[in-house]
Length: 309
Image (cartoon, rainbow, N blue to C red; front, top):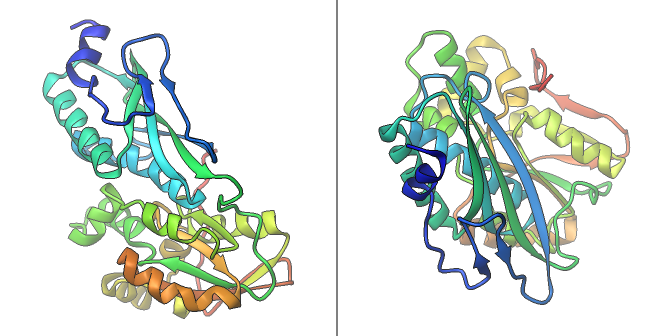
């Protein structure tokens, strides 16, 4: 099968978005933007053996490749609209491609995003997705708005994906719920949209809570005090931390794709309604301060955050 046959067979989907003027099949895509909106773009690459185990199935790879990009949209408070796909394959495997494309299509339909173009080539397995969203002018969530006295919050639980990967690397049978978090993180797009005008700063947790919160602190030129015992954990991870006296997976494991955000005191009463409406647990883990550093209270063996190089 030739490249263009592969694209037509597996990646030519119709879009019901009126803003997609021209999608897959031409030299470029054409999209329109409604008045009052700006464009938000992001891009992520996943490489086999680096970002996911070589044994990961095609359906999980496709899901995660799009999910991590959707998570970037969530962190900006943006409405995801379109994406492009660059797929590098070691071989042309129809069964793998069918599973990959169907999983990608299902998640794209769940979040209302349209595939509008891409590229394929031969090489070691890697997936690059570039995503485009809309954001109302002046409403984007940024890293740079945190102020002294703001509360620091996270969505759901932290460290599950890293714990699952740790289990796999130690030849243990991974906890099923944590394994699902590793392969199929749920992008918090609705939460991100709901935090517009409420949160002062926001980021998604991809490289670890410490590193990603530090990005907010640096951009906002502030410090923070985080209470380790306030960080929401599943029971299995609580047991691990207690037994091993090791907080590294929680604080620096990464791959959570939950949101970490700061909220001024005057807006904090809104979080209860947002939590219910989005069906997302929201937990305060600390407070922004003027120290200029990140202080983690009550944690031992913190370890180091994920570094790409």
